Image 1 (cartoon, rainbow, N blue to C red):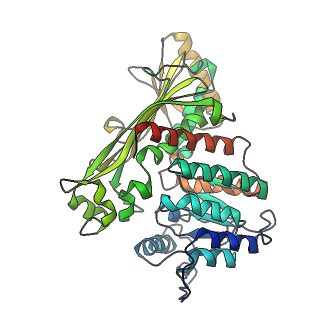
Image 2 (tube, rainbow, N blue to C red):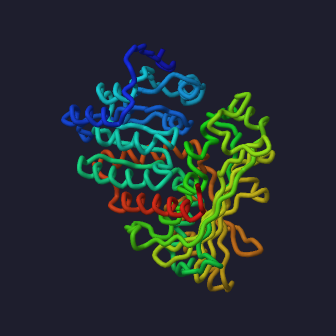
Image 3 (cartoon, one colour):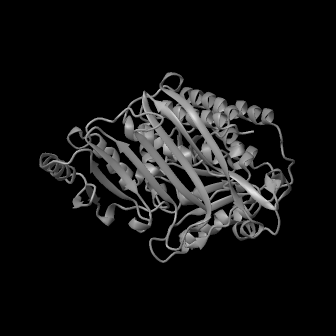
Length: 467
């Protein structure tokens, strides 16, 4: 049936080629079979989907993407969870999808993906210890890549990623990471308002003691995804495989700093960015919490180095201060086990201008929904008049915008039609990527700014003293 997932599990008895050298040899043999992305529909290949973000790319259907999707992965609970999510999207009553999953589970799934060449875009979301190698392998073998963050979690990975971007340029392939936070309307409008001198003035330079840009987020290990409790793989709690918080979720925050403060500007990590100080700390997970999140009765052996007094210490938290083209910024991420009742992941952001601060808050007072505030440095009737005129002008692009007076300034009232939850943002990123594929290129600033982003997080990790 069209709305039911079609799975074709192929059983094989071939031995696993375990070395990267063999994979490169396969690349040499297949290097002349690249896809002409301008002349064909996009065909997705999902490689070892260990994170639910891989499924969220398929929560919607797209006019430019073939409904038949090829999945290459080892057998196991992670693959089962991925396919269950796709099956749920296909069977839901409202706006069901119609994906057909062709699944290969042999030990040689990497080699099979390369030999068969069933698609032209590899989607990656899973174990971050493997991800940079997967990205490099896919690009070397002629696939475009849409990758979940982070694309690198250590200095070795960053160097390989830098080489991979060079190869992608040579082969005219598009390597892009999934930056969902750009699709949140409060972040988008904070960026828009910061470009209006009458409202914001100019971005202050700030200092380490008083950064001009601060972005903080709070996340949770145990939560709901697509209406069901999220069961995480055990490796998600291993920073050697997932990456520390300082190089994982902070990727989004650093991206927003760059995207909002320097729109359309190319950044050069070797001269524009200096990381000044950084710190890291652990979230303590009890055996009962670990079982609730993973459905495992005990900690795997690879987590033993992080266990103290029978509690698992996960270095998921971090913060760092840095300058970017002379602007002082601070980003911080923290992880709790579970959100308070009625709550969820939260985001705080402030951009300090010479005329006003633009602040996003998402706490209990905001009912855990992001709200954008405009708080003038010095209130005057003339400023209020200029702000009202600016919002009227902005409402021509974002219909329905309005202002609500607060104690410290104004709340920007945004119609609910513009609000997207975290899951819906994946479709927006995918649509942007499809547009870039049709054009055959990314915006000129995207690749250097991706490198700048990962350079920033990796340097912060080094300064934080990660072992």
